[in-house]
Amino acid sequence: MTLHRNLRLSNVRIIDGTGAPPVEDGVLDVTTDGVIAFAGPSAEAPDRRDADVRDLRGKTLLPGFIDCHVHLGFTLRNGPFHALRNDPALIVLESAARIRATLEAGVTSARDLGGLSQGFREAIDRGLMPGPRLRLAVSPISHTAGHGDMHLHGGRVALTVPELIEIADTVDEVRKATRLVLREGADLVKICTTGGMGSRHDHPDDEGLRLEEVRAIVDELDRHGGKPVAAHAQGRKGILTALRGGVTSVEHGYGIDDEGLDLLEERGAFLVPTLSTVFAIDKEIMEPYHYEKKVRWSEITKTNIGHAIERGAKIALGTDAGVCPHGQNLRELGHLVELGMSPMNAVVAGTRTASELLGISDQVGTLEAGKIADLVVTGVDPLSEIRALADPSRIEIVMKAGVVMKDLGKTAAETTPA
Image 1 (spheres, rainbow, N blue to C red):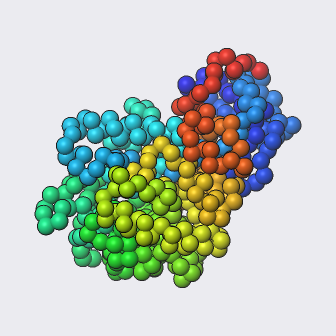
Image 2: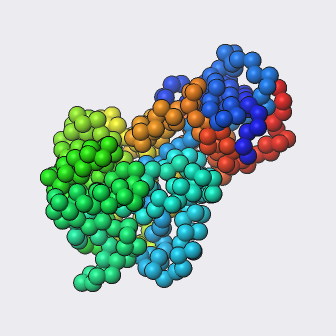
Image 3: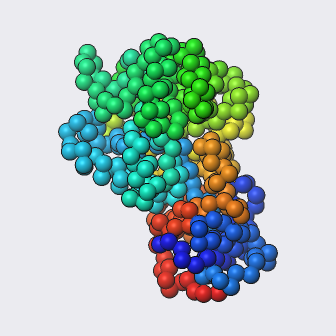
């Protein structure tokens, strides 16, 4: 539903994403062009006689959440041969369904780190399909037999769409791979500085791209106006390589230690721990090698990420949805709290901090006048029952840029002129 009149959300508890205490009797005004005009206590709200009013008594209003690590182009349950066995139209429509489920889970912005082409971003921006605003890596850069190399053992057949893989083994090749990814419409570049759990050729402690290669990618991006670099980095050595090379974010970071945390702080980089994949271990749908690595690393991860939380590392929410289920993105909030983060700080990780990582904090991430009206409404109290937000049915309203994308209530009956 597009707003034809200004809208006032009244009698609502506001958690604005800044970390400030909730406003218990709050008002939020949205203009017809999708911008927040006011957010604060009802006693300070301006006169808005030209607005429709919706009473949200008993509800909590939050910024739209931001998932900084998703893979909307696939799902683990489908298996590696799914894209090869099915009609391309089916693959596209399945991705569209996952994108919509992500939006309806309360995620109004997302960063896809491999497997989704720029056409999906354009389709959303043009209003051809509903979805979060997207930042795309398009295709990760990996070396041969590294985490991004999804070829069969001993063969030359890729398990995924060939154009969504960039293999590079020298400094010159990573420069060219960076240019190719940019040509495909990437908003950022994802690199692999370690092995991984879902890749059959390597392990999380294996080193991936080397320091000189990471620096070459960062330099290449600087030559093209500068774009962020997200590093798949699970083991300790690869985490340090990524940070020393100048990446923007460490994805996963399962083996991060104090040296890595010191570098993270020194470089102003972000940690995206993707705990949803650590807690989502399903032997029935995982390849044996994947299951074995996940079990072996799960407790290591919980210890190290718990320590990172204790130290106050700059953590942004990311789930690795695709490896874990889509449409349950806010489950990550509960996992962060389980490892020691306060519920309020978990909300901040999924809103303000995540917007800073995506470079859109001037537009979204907090509920403040002048920012785009991305917001969610829930009957859940996130500060006392944050795990309940994992259930999309508890996300009652999702608004993106002032447009109501999901509404489980009776909008027409409950909205009245002021």
